[in-house]
Length: 292
Ligand SMILES: Cc1cc2nc3c(=O)[nH]c(=O)nc-3n(C[C@H](O)[C@H](O)[C@H](O)COP(=O)(O)OP(=O)(O)OC[C@H]3O[C@@H](n4cnc5c(N)ncnc54)[C@H](O)[C@@H]3O)c2cc1C
Image 1 (cartoon, rainbow, N blue to C red):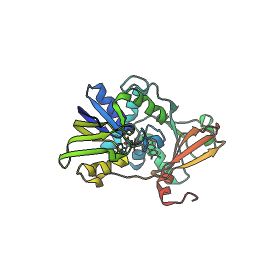
Image 2 (image 1 turned 120 degrees about the vertical axis):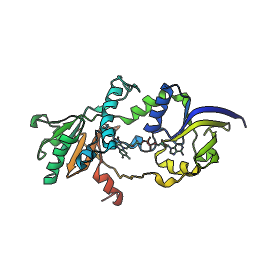
Image 3 (image 1 turned 90 degrees about the vertical axis):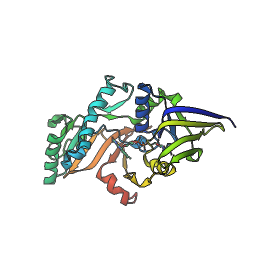
Image 4 (image 1 turned 60 degrees about the vertical axis):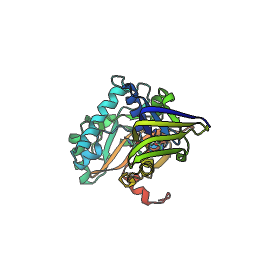
């Protein structure tokens, strides 16, 4: 069995959008970095995402003006620049499914207030849509329909775009049992022993820094390096998918200070539209059976 030793500036665990973006950033800054994935790139939340480049609607509806809310608002600008090739990473190859999302509301008075809060609280431009310019699905919707400049991207094309330029810096290891950390003390790793899924060769890495971008997998990795796994946030969702002869729709239905549903559209292999329905229904749906 052969063993190769290498020193790296950074070792990243997890090839979702966070890890891949970070790998790209580090590489552009001339750091020597390697990304480890134990399933398929994006196999966590990223590939199931609705692909909306959020402008902070959730925070605007709730009236939160925290630093995080502001940072989320600023992200739409950064994404736009990257998608247009004006900032790095250059994401001109990513498919844009919709240039905007629409906002509509339930009939409750609180929803009217919510929509007004969105109109004035969002950093991303929000405009009222004239009745004859509404998307067909919202033609008979009560109250105003607004358009917010949140783009929606095809997440698969984002993963491909980031991954293809770093193919030789990404290692698929398959099962996590093929990783062994040697610790100096809890939280301080001296070496990481890695075994490729399709090989018996061992790679012994001495990383300057290790970054866990493994989503749900972070808890176990933290445990492996002697850190508390409890700090990881879990936010399960139970998405609803509606398939049929449906009009294309991208947007959020405001219900008080919540989004009752967030709908994005895709097309299946038979050319039928599939609505991916997230928002409150997906959060509450975790408690429900599939039939409910
Ligand atoms: C249904 C749904 C819809 C969403 N819609 C949106 C949206 O419209 N807009 C938006 O901004 N956000 C959305 N999100 C949230 C968004 O998808 C996540 O915030 C984002 O994808 C998190 O990316 P990540 O890279 O941190 O984690 P993940 O995408 O979960 O990636 C983690 C990666 O780490 C790998 N991994 C796990 N354990 C290990 C290990 N031990 N070793 C190596 N690799 C490991 C996994 O296989 C995976 O590839 C949505 C989420 C869900 C679930």
